Length: 315
Image (cartoon, rainbow, N blue to C red; front, side, top):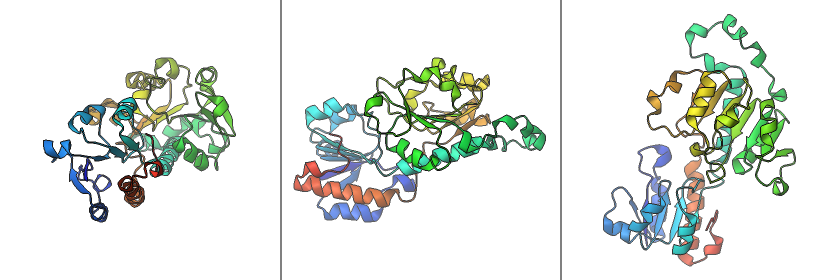
């Protein structure tokens, strides 16, 4: 049985540990790096393990039967195509959500005290921070608006819920949402989005959410609002966000995801109103320990034909 993987970035978080490789081989699987794979390797691939596979890649792998994603999102794959080809799909839900919630909390606390301005030594004075006196709202009185109610949102609510109870979630189907606090629909939220200090985007990317956060949404926020995106980059119209932050229509933004190739040379890197991270909100040194248990369990299920027992099964 043949596996191809794309954990080949040379980083600890994106390099399969030797003990996992050895365990995979003990199960009777051959595993190779997708980048170094020949056309024959791709033709005979039965399992793909990684993050960057797309629907167009499937043409090269006609024998593919199972995809396990090392991430949570699967918007690069057309699930209808996978169903037609009878390809099983699992993801790594449950591994990164806590870390993403912790990263979001860190960003909230950073903006809460206006620490984002401390990197500029010209602003390193009490006099400068006096301009932001009205922003120093206790977390207990800050109001959070969270878009989406998946595992990341639930973890975030557990964390931030110890500091404030002023948390509202936005979901498409309010009747089926199990959140015990305040719930709004995307249609009703626009009426009072300006009441919130932190607007947190945890949305997946789909036809409903694509470019949802645009100028029409940003203009309804208030000048003290902070926008945080740990969801998908395609949900935000970046140039609209940039305009509203630059004009001080909203106070700032934290982005772990963005559709900008050359982020280093973009003006937001030097703008104190932005916090930017290179898509690392879910990173912890526990990643491979958890991934080991998940993937080895699923390999065992796959080999024995117990597909219904695959963990995190999407298809």
